[in-house]
Length: 307
Image 1 (cartoon, one colour):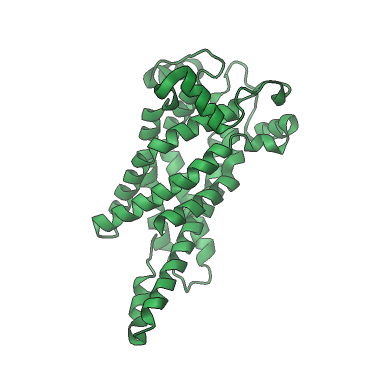
Image 2 (cartoon, rainbow, N blue to C red):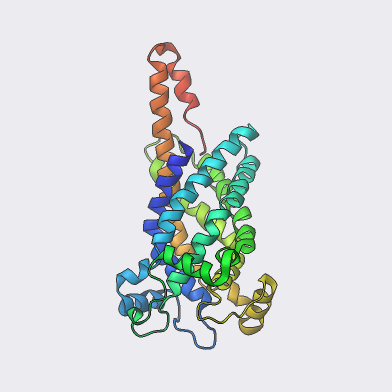
């Protein structure tokens, strides 16, 4: 059930947050000398004016296909790791989240590569339809594979691993601490607002903790879009970015990211938690039918104080 819940939560998160992600990527990779956008809201306005609202959903095919599966892996691995660790403690939540984050990088890296290349397609052109290199996300990956091979498809893998492992640890740790502190129990009339708040804040905490690594990942994955490569490695990308734009380069696109993080992760975690509560309560009711006297104890067991 953890895998199914993750799929549903991932789909909800993609629909809510993809426009913010498009803005974040464009802000992260634009040139400091000739910036196309003055900020988050200007970027939103420019994309809508030049490409219509559909421009905000460029590359959504890749995350919609991938993130539902990725979230299934993340929540499935996290749930099963917690069972292996035994005790539901904040430290175990962090370790289980970190393990889930590391494993899902295998799928996350190629998916985000396709998403980034699709989002950058047509950037700076008056008409985005005048030159389309990629038809869709699968065509994008196929083209990258033909030109750059397996290494090209996995471009940015190390940076993705550096970002995702601690990020998901913080993600599940923050959600666990907040849900325990807020007292998110099924009988609470304010349970859903509390779940939304806890999920949103968990997402914000996760992004703040690893955002510089995400900037480098986006730059490495966007590198070579015009046929010219600027960076030879993670350190080379970091060094050149700091030399040209200073340390503030690591905060570029952060506003858009945090604006996106709250609704996306609020929707994701609330969907996952409510689905798991519904399923576990249903299983508890079925188990209680032959022996009503044990129903109260079983229901108490199926109402955890955290995910």
